[in-house]
Amino acid sequence: MNPLLKKKRLDRWWRFNTLKKAFVAAQQAPVNSKKEVGVLDRALRRIGYRRAPHDLVLFWRELLSQGALRKPQLDLADANRMETLGRGMAPEMLPAQCWLDLYRLCIGVGFFQTGRILRDHGLCRMITDALATESAGSDVVIRGLYAALENGHFEDAEALLGKLERLGGFGHDLAQARWFFRLLQSGNGGNIEDGSGPLAERDCEFGAFVRGQRVALVGPVPNDKAQGAEIDDHDIVAKFGYRGGEKGRDPETQGERLDISYYNNTQAHQLAESDYGPVFAAIRWAVFHNRKGRSLFPAEHPGLRQLASIQWLLPDTHFNAGPNAILDLLRFHPAGIRVFNTDLMLSSGRFAGYTPAGAKPVDYTRSFIKTHDPVLQYQIMRRLWSQGCISGDDRFNQVMGMGLQCYLDELQQAHGARDKALF
Image (spheres, helix red, strand yellow):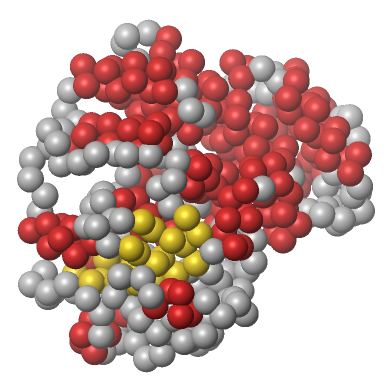
């Protein structure tokens, strides 16, 4: 195989765009023609799969009929037909990764509920593949383990943890997976350091700071509710992407205090290119999502640390800022975490100053496809909320209480195809 093509196949954004181009080209073909299916088959082969089976062809043709070139205006019956065809396909029909790629295509086209159904097929296939034989490879076992955890199949997850242990060589990752298992199963992960050696010095210091404290985790969504005093009343206040000054510190709606700030790679780069000394001096801890962000600053600088990422366990995606921060804090046993100003992307605005001046507007649908699977974010956050690991303000509790189906309806209304088809 061409080494370049082999590398491209590992890139979920490239795979999505390959399917998207096929979708756009097929919409221009005559209805029910061989060309409609031919472009799909070529795209699937290019990505690394076999030609489309019969049921997928039926689904594909219905999806084409909903595209902007064929039906600009949509109604509820359109979505219902798509969902019915999606449910009618058997999980074993396609590889797990193919289901995820088709899920992302549905998100891009704008059908979020239909995409969720295909994603469910993918998770089902992950579990089946991982449990099928004792000789399943580590990548297959890891995917099945995550799928079992998200679906609440804890007996299957326990069996797959055993498989992972027998494969050997996972060290701290295995301890981290067992902690995550206990957290989702019972709401109490225990000590993640059990069986994996002592915590690093910075983590020990951070743990001493967080342990037993009431933490307010404040997101960047604008809010006109006067809850700043409630936020500031917590023992610790954590926020995101702080770059100095009063950004994110509105005393009425966000609270003035700021003890911990979490940074993704983009925010870390922005900060590294500025005078970051006063920023770090104004807070107690700066926490980076991975080594790349942390490496932009001197190793000896006090109050800086990198969180222990659980990305290796996730099925070809990343946690976004909220789950990353929550899981990081939960490692150190705070007395409680209360989430404010967060609605899991149902509103696209951010508080003034959160995004640097001149930055391009965030394309949230692109983010859902390329980086942050919205179903995964919601499912994990809701599980932690239902287990009592976290609580929230009125808006956050409303979003958690609506359930996945209603959440995706609102997400589609905000970012997907509602009345007008996309592509």
